[in-house]
Image (cartoon, rainbow, N blue to C red; front, side, top):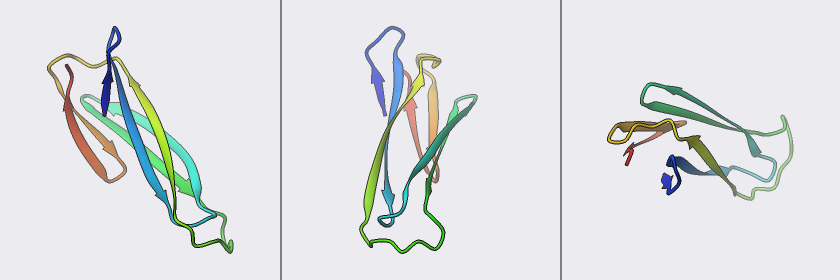
Length: 89
């Protein structure tokens, strides 16, 4: 989680995830917001019945959540089954 020193401040989330084998790849990232909670759903995809190398991989994504956050308010960011809170400066 980072807050860019811009005007207005931009909230950024850095996401890193695992890819279970050589055929699995990052698929998509969807964001939604309800009040002070931001939900981010990250999915991967893998071809059905593929024979793949057993090499664990990673993906990285930077997500700009924008600037629609009120100073002093606490916000929750949920990424799949992980959750963190931050206070907007």
